[in-house]
Image: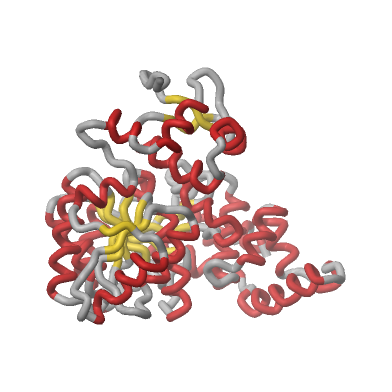
Length: 393
């Protein structure tokens, strides 16, 4: 499959238009995977992680006789049954030309503009990202997801706008899903203060969905980014919305649910954030309001933090305060973690856990917060104290 794509001059031209970094064959293989597999396909993700995108693609569309018997073999055969009907080189070429037509960029894992927080999804991480707008915003920090109900109340939209506007004015990147209600209010408020915002779509970036947000999404492309893991031409569907939610949670340093019903899709985003160890906030509403029942559920069942102001939202990801020393001393686990890290050599998360006695999940979450606060830095081989930060006695 890759051979026929590599030899196609139209495909080579389309790939150049997408300005993808790295090995062209690897890029083509990953584009092919975005066509073959549905978002979050863990079997495809595991295969790519083990073999690389190109070799995995050869196995995926190759003969079933190459698959060894056993449970793993059956899983792979089931995957092949899903992927082979889509194994059309023309579909891959069309995906790239469609992206080129709307001036989209192709971002691959390992690219300088790839948000590494997505890698926390493991085998469920996206194989590629299709981006319209400025892809560098995906790596700008901090990034905060503001999500909630489509059928939002005036109360919910007011708060979403107030929070997003002040956070964006302070330099945060506002992340949401481009939908009606809370999402739209958050995006518009960020744009209104000339801040940065990112919309993750469930369909291709060439499709404005919902239709009523065509102009809003166009404005986001001009100053921010519209992103999807599915190729151009792909229609948004219910399961793709649910899969899209994991990207919103993973790319963000914190997630805030402003308003949500008991079964709102926003709770799916919140669930992904909680599973990834990301800070999670929920805005309370009237106890009689069905539109806030989901937020109250998050506060009760998901250990979400109650947030009512932009300052409280900043606290979720460890935003700077007027007294960082006092804030650090108030959390003994953070003090133990900082005492375990030196400025001389890089330490892995496992070694930091051993030295500090803090659980791995909490260490990973706190390292992200401390990095944002300028107290630690990620280097080759692990983590170090940031320059100018001394040990706390």
